[in-house]
Image (cartoon, rainbow, N blue to C red; front, side):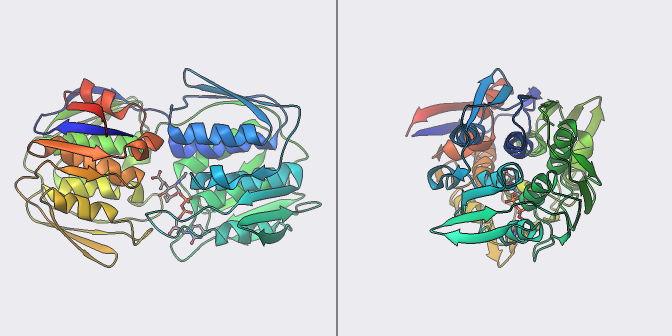
Length: 420
Ligand code: EPZ
């Protein structure tokens, strides 16, 4: 396994281009199961998770080619309705093949995804929605087996204890595109990635309204056609580089962003004292004066994204004063606290809250990556820590960040890969 070695203390300056959104492309790849025709997806990041979804689509009978950011998906001679445990257990997002498989083949057998370090990750809302469309559901040896002679549109409330569910909204919306009649999803997720998925489905011939609002309306159609689509930029990668600029007291032009997807992140970083401007599809962020501590609460979109929680924690770890981060989506998503404290941070966890007392300096150390965004927070901390930081098990990072060390190196970071 590889590790990333970072020598801290260098200011980042220059330009970086953001890749396509991981959390948009994964459900869009799953949506290609809804048609027997060829689909072309552009702006696809070369990520471990994209490779995993590619393997899953191939195991379900698709031919999938990935070439210079473009994925071409076409039907193969056979198609299967079984998404295997070995693949699904490595990536929770695989579960979003359930809806399209059921919609297209009227049968699906998908392994239940395991939990992960950020939480239990239940799928009760996915199953509630699929059932509401008329499918019969059985759990057999860790697999969900869903069947339906004909899915029927219905009104479904998809809100859970922690608000809306992104992938449950995706699963139910995809299944509903081929159901008979109208489906209304209440308390649907409003994330930009759901909007992007809906746009792709509409290009395939689906009839969807309300994407980006809590009420989605889907009028079922008989079949869907192939389509071409370019994926939106990754708002979490953009946010990660915004923090990289501030934590190193740098100045970065971040290109290929949708500024409107970053509202809550821009708001909070400006509150901390960042200078942020935007022009065309770029965002310029620079550090001008000492930052102030901030309080952050994660919420469903358009609230502050949980996927930016760990990154902002690293920034607040070196910002004088007391900051409080409250995690309302995954109350256990604090595995990065222990690792940051090993680097000299003063962070105390109190249930869903993390109380951060900013310190003058972090010290480089060997640290363990655990989940994608926690790993990013450790890299950010390494950029500012005194001395060398080694981030181990960086395959977690490779799941969701395309060429991260190359992009950071180009901005002036001293960062390189070594065998663990
Ligand atoms: C998506 O996961 C993202 N992943 C996650 O990003 C992101 O953290 C999450 O949305 C929240 O924004 C992808 O899009 C591939 P949820 P998802 O269902 O859809 C609870 C990353 O780092 N819930 O919106 O699986 C759940 O426990 C990843 O890129 C239920 O209770 O998340 C959580 O508390 C990590 N029942 C809340 O809802 C369900 O059936 C939101 O989860 C489903 C979810």
